[in-house]
Image (cartoon, rainbow, N blue to C red; front, side, top):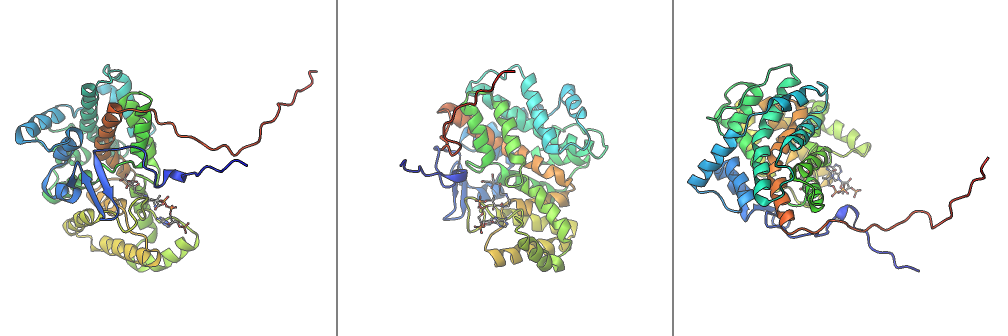
Length: 376
Ligand code: SDX
């Protein structure tokens, strides 16, 4: 009898490679980007500084930051052809499909796509980082019948993103909360979409192919799609006083409650306290205590019943809702942030590559002969 090899379903608990980009520590409930605690980065740095850190391994000095910001600001615009491709898509296409298609198109149109040198790949990464806000804002407006708003080079990343999405200059509390969400979403080790990007990179395919695949992986509600799904749950529940009855029914039907649970963290997500504080500031700014009541009631009741804690998507969903984003735009916002982590991992994978190709254990039919059919 053959000994049955052990299967690690979902690769749960399996270390597959080293990374120097981030460290997720469920024991201490902490997350480090290049050694820095993410909540300290969120409190003291801009998203641009954090993006620089993820790619270059160190925080920029003022001169490096200035040059990096100039570069990012100069690359924000969208070519006419990208807009044409987006416009060719159905108005009710899911924005994740639109963003995936736009990134794929940019890759097909970029003459540098086959250049796999680290310099060329970093250049492509910064290009996508700079252009994703334009793409996501374009889609936020297109689906609402509104015209494109050109980027403004006098604004930082987050202020410009909100400007392009809403055509109004955002106020400081909103810019700060948005910037914090981008920093928290930027990177999280070998999550499903990052691993997808690394698998694609391991075949020596180009960076745009890896990012396009990662966007596909992020769309699902067990991963990035959860922030959108959280808002649908809030709509279903309606208000704080309905939480108990709604949970009875949802848990009775064995539904997964989106925005709760995590493969690695079992005692809470390290990023939630920081995003929770950002959400509270938005609730005050927009004067929506009712939303915070619903948010708190559902989290408290679900965690009390199941011992499962909220993940980052739980506070970020309602935060993006308050800012005015359509629910279907929440996961594309996650794309705009995570493109930094994805591309840092693509560079790391390429620098020490091994084709990712695990084994499977066959459990189908035993070998058998193809029946020979009589010819007529
Ligand atoms: C992200 O990995 C990353 O880093 C991802 C991410 C990142 O930054 O990249 O952090 C971003 O993707 C956050 C996760 C977003 N997903 C959701 O919010 C979807 C809802 N959550 C789950 O379905 C679930 O918790 C997962 C998918 C996130 C993790 O699931 P696992 O590790 O595969 O665990 P499991 O589904 O096997 O759950 C274990 C038990 C089960 O119960 P039993 O069968 O043992 O009785 O916990 C229960 C599950 O049913 N459970 C839930 C639940 N999460 C776990 N039950 C109800 N609702 C939930 N949300």
